[in-house]
Image 1: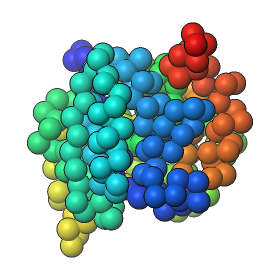
Image 2: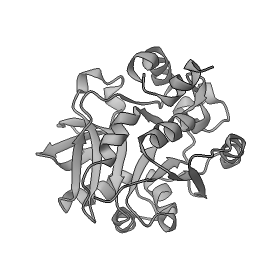
Image 3: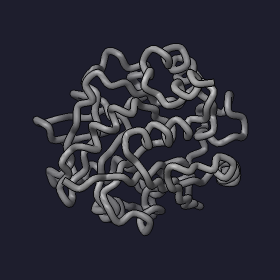
Length: 253
């Protein structure tokens, strides 16, 4: 089984729903429990086994570049790709990284935090050459904002539909995907008027029966997309994200 040690992080959006807290700062730099969201993503992914990151930026790209330059990460490599069309759907941001990723990779959102053990388990899944495996959560009752969550409909371990507005669904999208570069071809073919979302590409994979699910079980994750979600995550962080490298760092201060 091929070891996956590369990761694509989508961090280009303007985070309009959290601007009351972020002001003009990009959402990836909004602080959660003393550290920017992007730092949570990077350190948790590295703890799971990721050594190379490609980060797609757009809105306030200058601020993210400055923050990354100040960190001087030594344990992993970071490549930054800028998407000038960041106002479009997130599939366009993913496509901006096409030339930087030639091997299977972990695909993450810059506003979804997770436990390293969950990413570690996903990275250990067997991935066919043209498949996508999405980490899904069947524990629907524990989700903070169900209306805003992206839902998935399953047939066995195959995902047959994905979207926020599904009336029938079996689990929720955690924002963690194990992919091969075949994803980029699907996104290209899904483009309409120069635009496409990740879900557009995933639906194509679903039609080909190449979109599978991985149950995160009791693993915790959280989409931090609104001030309310941020406040909720702050309140449960120490309890539900006890493996977080951020907490471990604070414990040694």
